[in-house]
Image (tube, rainbow, N blue to C red):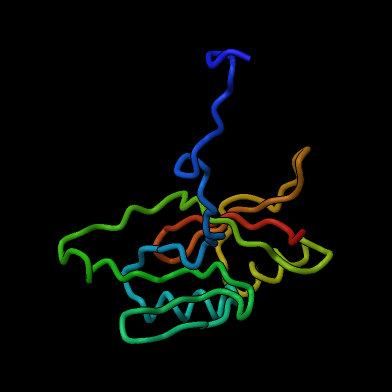
Length: 141
């Protein structure tokens, strides 16, 4: 076999590194008043207050991960304004009856922008928090 026909083995330095298995810990939701937002997300939407340390407040479901960090906008820039609209955040509702869960939230004062609605790919609804942040709701898988 000629030297030109030999295939070089990849060197150890070119091997792909083993990557750490990261996960989403928190997603920021910008709010005008952290205390009022905490009350709405826990009392109206039914999420748990998972972390509360001075300016750091996170809501979600205890033991489930994927928390919403309620960021008060005035702590970033005193003259900043909110940018309400589609947050891109989806919350999963437990239970077998998605429509009944949405009805319960609506009767608890949660504003629905759309739905509940069934599409070919499944059910969804869109809600709006008091600061205008829109969140999607979908049934738990």
